[in-house]
Length: 98
Image (cartoon, rainbow, N blue to C red; front, side):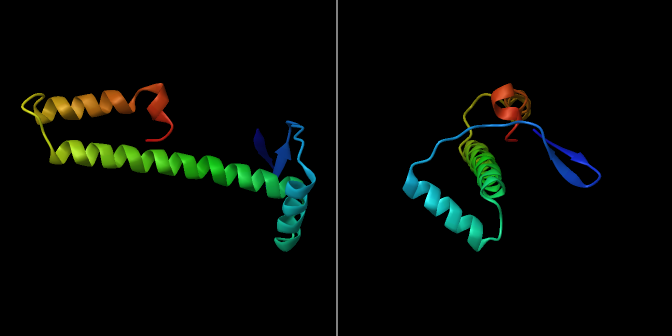
């Protein structure tokens, strides 16, 4: 986990990851092009991936709710649907993306 101390990130977890030669060379080239260490480059890539997945999930959820709003069924009532949406958004599997 990254923490903040005097404006600088404190790195307190170590992960060992093995790469084949080709992928490592690509990592090294990307890091050098961005003037970053390989470790910082990997951390940024992981952070970007997690953020992108969250945005993708949030977009899918928004589209689902919009579709449901455009295609109502006889029940539940709009008020019930709003309550159901709130309950869905409170689920642990959805809470982090909403």
